[in-house]
Length: 148
Image (cartoon, helix red, strand yellow):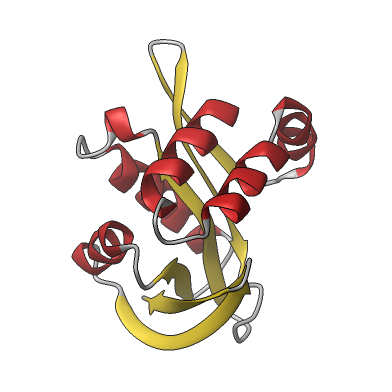
């Protein structure tokens, strides 16, 4: 899991998130962090290809949206395995979990400058609904909410 996070974050956010902040975020998610998360996260999906973890997603009740809304918190696939439909598989698996939880709507937040993520969610029918800004290491980054 550590490698998936490191590789996917480095590829997705290099040049978007300030380099020092990006390095710090990647370092924080070490093996110990993932071991704790695996034990406590109730909706952690792990994508395994031939015994190697190549992607993961987490989802649950939306953190800052109205009731009846589910959220995909994270969805990442190692760059080597992107473009093969594996992200779509994780996306649909999250959607299934949220449906079984009885949540009628779904939301995903993505950095506006992460064009690859925005296109991924648009191709799956996500509609941009709201925008917000977040400060990261002296930079102000815009996020967009995609909803279904």
